[in-house]
Every structure is written in C-alpha cells, then in structure tokens.
Amino acid sequence: MSQTQNTDFSIHPKTMMGLISLTVASLENQIAFYKQAIGLKLHWQAGNKAGLGAGEADLLRLTEAPNLKKYQGVTGLYHVAFLFPNQRELARAVGRLFSLKYPNAPTDHIMTKTTYLDDLEGNGIELYAESPEDGTWTMKDGKFDTYRKDGSWSNGREALDIDALFSHMVEGDELDLPVPSQTRVGHVHLHVRDVQEAVDFYHGVIGFDVMGVAKPFRMGFVSAGGYHHHLGLNTWQGEGAPPPPADAVGLNYFTVELPTQKALDEVVARVDSADIASNQTEDGLLIYDPSQNGLILTLPAKK
Image (cartoon, rainbow, N blue to C red; front, side, top):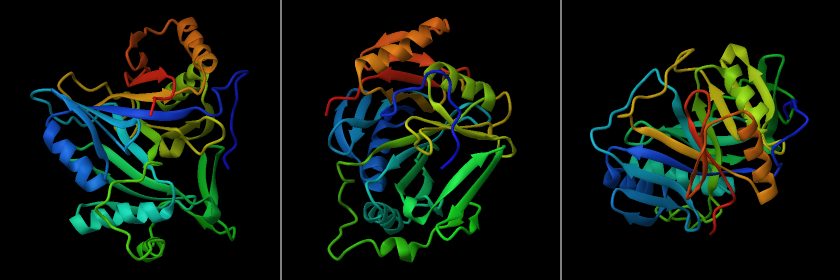
C-alpha cells in the first residue's frame, strides 16, 4: 500500500465515485456501444440525454450536442474505470469485447486486473477487478513500484494472462448478459495542466489523501479511505494543457459521492473558503478544478 500524506482534515473515508457525464456527438451510437460492448443497461432516454448503468443508480450520463469533435492536447478525461465485483465478471466483460473483436488492451497491474479501450468517440474506458491477493504497489519518493505476492518486482503494466482470467468463468456464463448490479465507477483518471496544482486542489480543498506523486511518470493518485486511487491525475496531454473548446466531445463532469450530509457540508465549506465558484444543480454542487475539469459534490444517488 502506498504511503499517504494527510492534512489536518481528510474527506470521509467512505467517499466514493459516482456517475460520470459525457457530452457526445451521437447519442444513439454511444448508447448502442455502451450496451453492446460494455454491457450497461439503458435506464432512461429523453430528448438528447440518456442514463445508463447496472440496473440501479446511473453510472453514465450522455448528452448529445451538434457538431462536436475530439481534441488532442487538452485537459479532460483520460479514462473512466468501471469496477467489477470479481474477476469472473471481468472475464465475462473481456470475453464480450473479444467476441465483438473490439480493440482493447488487457493489462495486469498485479493488485488489479484490467483492460483498456476507447468508446466510439475516443473517451477512455478501463474495466477492472481488484486482485490484492496477487500483490501491492508503492508510490513514494517520486517512484512507482509494484510487487508480486512473492516479493518480486513488476512494472505494474504487464500483459494480462487471458487464460488465467478466463479460468474464473464457469460453464453457462453468457457473454451477452448485462453487467452485474454491483458494478460501479471505481475511479476516474484525468488529464490536468499541472499535477502538483491538481494534487493541491484535490487534497488541500476537496480533502482526498495523497497516495503518491510520481514526477517521472507525470502522474499522481489521490483517494479516500486508503483506496489505491479514486482519482488519477496526469499531464500526458502536455504541461500547461488548455481546457477543451466548447465544441469538444468528452467529459462534462464526474461525481464525488459523500456518504453523509455532514461529510458533504465539510467539503462544501472548504470550497467556499477557497472562493471557488460553484453552481447548485439537480445532481449536486458543480465546481471546476484548476484545469477546468467539472466535478459534482453530492450524496449517494438513490437506487
């Protein structure tokens, strides 16, 4: 486990990531993709908007706008990571992608098993399951290291043993069924203009603990309750990258769910003390980080 850095306050340890909202160029195409390739259910659709998930609270909101395009060299979403309850369900998800011949990159982070892909409009997606029994990681003194359970070192980005993953499936598992109801957004990874600036905001204002900053990787992780990361922050689109133009596809906002009204009020008070502009929406309090990535502070969504 990485060594955390704390202020005299920390966000509530049971804080979790909620739904993510994307602006899309084609609502129908994206709905079809997330249903067929990812296995999400369409919860509702109205006009140019739709909500998808695992059958309970929305995990994904889509809003269509005209004449959008994908930009490079800007801040925004690197990927949204959907967390599966176990490796059996991850195997079913990866098997679905293989059956569709949809490009993806199965990767072994040792403490998680995962695959990476892009949706039809270039939004990054990670599908993963926890595997702490296989090892752990550290990010300290600016260095990221992963260790297997036998103590041997790994770069944490090995090719995933697909046969081993598929061994978790049992006879009768169907690839075309929706994801299980326990599926949720496990973490969000953002492109930012400056890693330390972003860490200072998410740690010093929002209250996430710093799990580590690896300057050689131009990356940092923050989390609640000792989780490996609820937010990843990187400058891989360039140091000082600008926010995306108004006609860009991609991140509208992501959601941080505080477990109690008291916990939410504490974060909102820090936002107000920092003179950060905010806007109360039907989903919660909308603010923007220094790189103009939108986030909503709210209570857990009703299922």
